[in-house]
Length: 310
Ligand SMILES: NC(=O)c1ccc[n+]([C@@H]2O[C@H](COP(=O)([O-])OP(=O)(O)OC[C@H]3O[C@@H](n4cnc5c(N)ncnc54)[C@H](OP(=O)(O)O)[C@@H]3O)[C@@H](O)[C@H]2O)c1
Image (cartoon, rainbow, N blue to C red; front, side):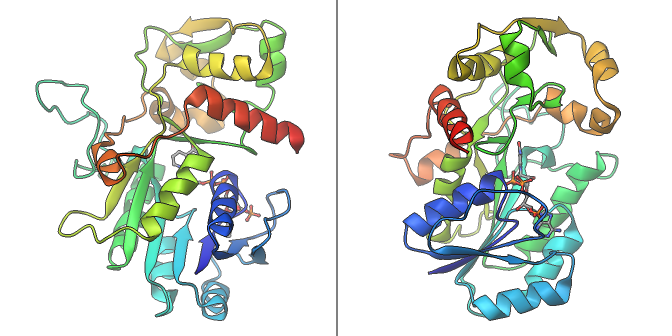
């Protein structure tokens, strides 16, 4: 099997390259060469291509003749469209990575629960939604025009190479701040709604999707989350435990306080960060009832170990 990963040297792509090569795939990753990364596993190589260069993208696909393609970084309709048009006939399946941000803000009320998580067929955001959410919806639509396509929607992806997420963005300095006893701002009175997915588990899901049977008449979309749904303090505790720092102190804030403390570049992502749409994973669990994602505490520990090993 030959699998090409578009954007394959980041957090998810690296885990995917490792899982696929272990499963016997020959893997080629495309990247621009701007993101530093450890050596690729045996059985994988990298080709420097900017996906926005349509000719170079098509040449890379033709040269490799993949059986499978994973689009790790489709953020716009035009990006997914360019890839779709360049797919060679050798390709049997394309997995496009998407995000929970595509779901319309107010969760669908089902079974009398106004906070019910989103199922794959729920309405998606439209005009007026943040541009990055609209871009992900457009990318999904463009990808799904190809009958070989599957879209996988994630909540929070984490793993080696990605600093941990906090309510004010990713924080490469979080370990030092926790060790110093600094209180981390978190939303006050916030229910558990973080659904972290460990990169290793993400990779396992994608591997299984490459061989998955047809989705039939249902949309070829799958929500994917990890083992737990957490609030921010529990997420921070998992990191503190893995680092051996004291139990984290938190500073409960109103949304307005968090917005005031957020760096300007984060402002447009803040609503999704503080109130991420929750994903229903009935479909994922029905596909592979025996498969268990890694418990978050264990996965964070593995992430820390891998980052410390470099
Ligand atoms: N992180 C989360 O919490 C989260 C949550 C929900 C969904 N997702 C989804 O997960 C995906 C991101 O995956 P990730 O975390 O593995 O990404 P990542 O860590 O940001 O890595 C991005 C990869 O793409 C490459 N790249 C970036 N721009 C490129 C371009 N123009 N042409 C070719 N390669 C390019 C980067 O390498 P170079 O810089 O060297 O090119 C790198 O290999 C996205 O689809 C996102 O919507 C993430």
